[in-house]
Image (cartoon, rainbow, N blue to C red; front, top):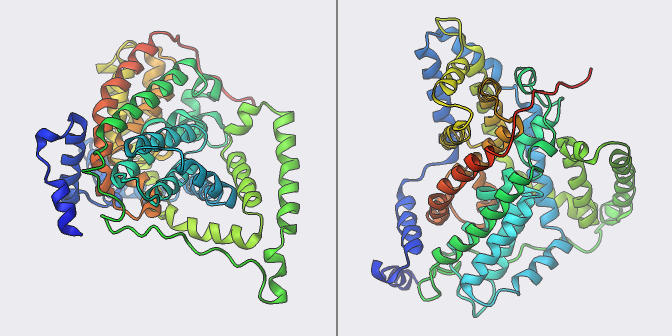
Length: 483
C-alpha cells in the first residue's frame, strides 16, 4: 500500500498544474514542520509580554495583568464552546445524516466532489461555522466511502475547511460582529470607543455580502484546479483513515429506569417551552438584534439539535462526542484573555500601554484611504499567533477602533475589515481545524498544503476588496446604548 502511494506521489512537477504543484509541495513540507495549535497561543503570550516589557512596563505589572486577565473571557469561552457543541449536535442528527448521504451521491467526478464540498462548507458557514465544519467533514467521509470515485481525501478535507478559512467571519456567527452588536458582551474598554454596532452595519452591508459571494466563487475555482486528478489522488484508504460509521444508539431501553431516556416526551416538552420563548423574542424585538445575541443563537441551535436527535439518549450521546472538539477553545481562550489584559493594563514608562502604542502606530502610518489595507494586513499577521475571532477582537478592538474614529473610518466596515482579514490566517493556522480534523481522522499537516494555496489567492483579493469597498462608505459617530 505504501509503495503504491509513493509511486502516485512521484509524478514529475511538469505533470502537475500550477495550483496542484503548490498544494502538493506545501503538503510535503508541512508533514515535517507544522506544530500543535497550543504552541501558537503560548508564543503569542510570550511575545506580548516581551512587547509590554519593552515599553517599560514592570515585570510585576505584566505578570499581574497576565493573571488578572486569564479568566476574563470565561463567559465568552463558554458561549463559543456551545457554538461548536450545538453545531456538532445538529450535524450528526439522523435527519442531517440522511441529508449528507443524499448530498454525497451528487458529485460525478473527484474534482467535482472537492469543489462541491467547498461550496457546501462556505454556504453553511454563513449561518453557523460549527455546523459547516462538522457537516462538511461528515460529507467528505460519506463521499470517500463511495466506490468507483477516487477522490483525494486531503483536498476534499481542505475544501471542508473553507467555510472557516474564507467566509465564516462574514456570516451570522462572526464573533466580532456578535460582540459589537451586544452591549452585554462588549467590554467597557471597547464600548466607550465604538458604541453598539448592529448587524445592519456589519455583516448585512451590501459590500460585505458581495465580498462573501466573490470569495465563494474564487475559492471553488482554486479548489477545482488544486485537486490532484484521480490518477494522482491519495484516498482515505491510502492514508489509512477508518471510514466506518459509528455505532447507533440502541432502539429501546434495557431496563425500566431508562424509559424516559428513549422517549421523545421530554424532548417535546423542553423544545416546546424553548419555542415559545424564541417566538416571543423574535416577535417582540428586532430579529436582527435577537439573532445577534450569542445566548439566543446557541439556545436556538441547541433546541434544534435536541429536536432533530429526538430522544434524550441520542442527544446526550451527540453532546458527549462533541466535547473533544472544544478542548482547544477551553484551554486556549484564557490565554487570549491574559494577552488582552497585558496589552491594555500593563502601563509602560511613559504611562501608556502597549495597546496605546499600537493605536498610535496605526494613526501614524495610515490615513482614511489606506486604513482598511493597513488594518487588514495587521489583523491577518496577528491572526497567525492568536487564532481566535472573538478573543483576538477583544485584544485588537480598543486600539484599531480608536484609530478608526480618529481617521473617520466607517466603524461597521472596520469590523468587517477585521472579519475578512481574520479568516486569512485560519487557512494555515491549525487552531480552528481541530474539530474538523477530529471528524476526518487527519492532522493539520495533511491539509495545509491545499489551504495554503487558497491563502495565496485570497490575500491580495481580500485586501483589494477591503480597500475598494471602504471608498463607498462614510463615517458615522459611535452609537451608545440607552441606559
